[in-house]
Amino acid sequence: MPDHSGVLYIVATPLGNLGDMSQRAIETLGQVDLIAAEDTRHSKKLLVHFGIDKPMIAFHEHNERDQTGEILRQLAAGRHIALISDAGTPLISDPGYQLVRQLHEAGIRVVPIPGPSAVITALCAAGLATDRFCFEGFLPSKAGAREKTLQALARESRTLVFYESPHRLLETLRAMLAVFGPQRRLTLARELTKTFETIHQDNLANMVAWVEAQPEQQKGESVLVVEGATVLPSQRFEVDGDKLLLTLLSYMSVKDAAHHAAQLTGQGKNELYQRALEMKRD
Ligand code: SAM
Image (tube, rainbow, N blue to C red; front, side, top):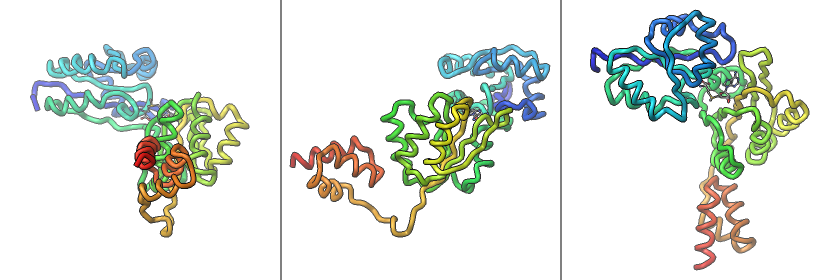
């Protein structure tokens, strides 16, 4: 590591409740030369609250590439920099991964200052298995891509954690109901650490009805923690995709065969559709 270079501190900030700001986060932000923030105006309010006055630069998904070079130059010149996001832990569904990777390549020190993150905050209160889980971040916004992602996860036995923005919550819950089925349990963790915090667990059928009946549940930010698939011993069999397609093709169209084969095997529908077309031709 070049001993004259600065350090990049990755500083977690509160999800909503300022009481969750750690002592170490306050000290670090008060000591660095520069603070790189996703939204400087938004973060300024947090810094003012803690009496911190430091030069700031914007670092967000649209300027990450350009700013990475600038931050590298400043660190190489010996300046200490803190990276913060709008809320929670930077890099967790937030920009910064390319920057941190390049700092490792350049031998520049990266120090995490841990604190809140919505994924762990939701998971610990969700009442679903926590020993193994997979964090899926945001689902694709387009319906087709979202369904495909959910299909690929349908047989995942670990607890699944998703981030969701307010305007898509109901749409996502309905898509989950269609793919995971009505009995799969999930916990909706909304407005965590804030005044209207809601942590509600039910099965998918009831959850969709509950959110439909209470539009206020669609407001604010949320995390969806979904129970993993139950894999019964009798369900543990390998499906030969070609044999399955061949059988289905004798009863239905290429499109329907691909659709059902995708549901049964968890394989991609497009891929199965192409294979079914080939089989039909042969
Ligand atoms: N880096 C952040 C973290 O460590 O959690 C996440 C940033 S991501 C752009 C924003 C998403 O995090 C929101 O759409 C929501 O899914 C989740 N989130 C952030 N704050 C939350 C809160 N107070 N309650 C529930 N979910 C929250």
